[in-house]
Amino acid sequence: DSPGVGLSIDRGMVTMPRQPSFEVSIPQTWTTTATSTYAVTQWGKTHHNIGNHFDLSNGRFTAPVDGVYQFHGIMMGVSNNGPHLAFGINGASNGGGGTYTNNEMWAHSGSNDNILIQLYHNIELSAGDYVRLYTYGYNSVSNTARSYFGGHLLG
Image (cartoon, rainbow, N blue to C red; front, side, top):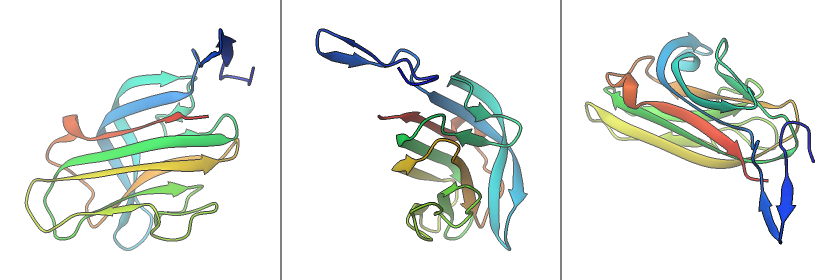
């Protein structure tokens, strides 16, 4: 039984009733981290935060245990040319950090108004590593209610 995870085995089935998991929406605040790179540092709505490992005050999910985590980021209503979305580990704003190099965790979309950008990635983290969602080239969306950041421990 890992702290904060609650792994149990019943008749050969593994369950994690306290599996670290979160999902937030309605991005509120972007903080500039480079010339045109922004960290989403505040979210308006928490859908769930099992284990309280997502910190609403800074937009970070901190891994409670070593493992592989699956994250998703969705931005709806982006209206700029060539927008990007990235996961950054431990403050790396370029879609990397830890064992990931720059731009390994980026999604890039075309040049339309009101476009949707989605990014999904499985990331191996050590306990204490944190992940935040970053945008490139924009710091607002027209459809905040349908813009999300979430993740959970795979194992």
